[in-house]
Image (cartoon, rainbow, N blue to C red; front, side, top):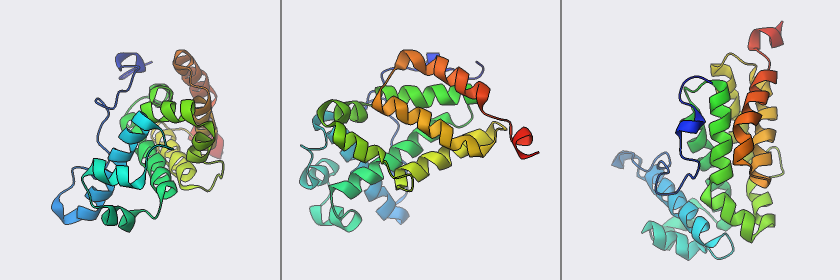
Length: 202
């Protein structure tokens, strides 16, 4: 592999090392985006500590230092919070993969999923909740965000963006059955079979 390889990154992506969500550091002119990002950042930390069942809307508001009424201005219930959280974490991982060689990007994304503290906590405590977070519905926001991010990475690598569905399915398998040892080998194989854009459109 070339560029910044996954072997150079810590396998255990602790929340202390995790980059802030988009919007956390925006200027006051976009206060709503900053508030939303702060709420989601608090939510991911609580889920990593407690799981989804033991995380309440009150907990999220308190952890974010935001009034509960303000939380309800952004999200009607926990399901909406967690759906938005999945989408935000996908964007965060995609941002980290930008600029990497395709094989490296795939491996980094898989490693992040394999070691994500919130995902692993939910998987241990409530597999049904994990299935809901991932979203079986291909039109769910999380799936759309994942396909869009994968298509961007593929296009930047000169590959056919239509391979995004295959990439997302492979990464989803790491949500259900994490295997950090397989991530690099799997990324290598997947990168080898994803078609080039020119070949795919002839």
